[in-house]
Length: 436
Image (spheres, rainbow, N blue to C red):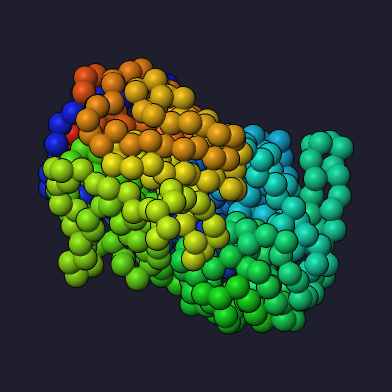
């Protein structure tokens, strides 16, 4: 396990460009299993989670060719069934939450898939009922294999169906869509997720010959096809990373330019940070953050009650940025209530910020009240461990703003979501060292 050694309290400056979106990459990478023709994907973030998924794809039988940095070609002419129905497959999937996305394309192409023991962040219960109920609606069945002690979803003669999802699950929607593309007849999915990255998956599938309508809405209609073809697809910039750099600029009072952000796909992200009092300038397709030398003031509601920021399915605010918003609020002028609705363990990292001197009241597993310092008191350097990707980046932002030397252990969690983060931050003036 590696660590980051950080000397905080220094202003940063310069230009940083976001990587490709992790959450989109995990979806479109699994979609290559739906065709035996070549699929080229550009702007893949070379982070632990995507590299682990690519490694699993190779073992499944996908021929993978790296054309250049962040661009790969995939061709799935033959699938190694002995691997995908083995204990080794289960073990490999146990290191990666995104492995859940393998079920849909494997079921669509082979008519059978194992339910892997998925890994990922320990941020609370993340059930897969939405995925399974969707497959059952299409005519699949669940069976238990005593040898592997695993559940299999099987569907040799799937048929399109109408369904209403009990939750607008992004990965659940993606899995069902990928299966439905190869399922006879018409499938309608109501209460479907409509995040930009799910839209990107649907556009890629349409380029492969699928017929998906309603993209961007919560009602998707899919006309099943016998086969799909190859295509070339480019992944969007990661708006979660963009939000992280906005928070970093604010906490370090730095002037930063974030290049090529894809403004039309950012949704409410800039608006939410502006509620915290941050100045966010749009210059063509870039974001320019001026140095907030005199701090920033949280905007209360019109009746002067305390502002609440909570997560919600798209077009609401993503839960992946609530931890960054929380950290930014620790140095704001004013108070803020964070309401994390979707995961019951995601706010438990605040004890580390409290150790650094932040004024935070953890009301319950879902809510935290932050009383801002208004930069009158700087956060204190400390030694801590990253519990998950998003808490990890938030602790890193806090450490870069704190005076003194901080150490963050378990940085593999950060590497799962951010490519070469120490090198990229060093390029804009951060004093950060990776120690193995």
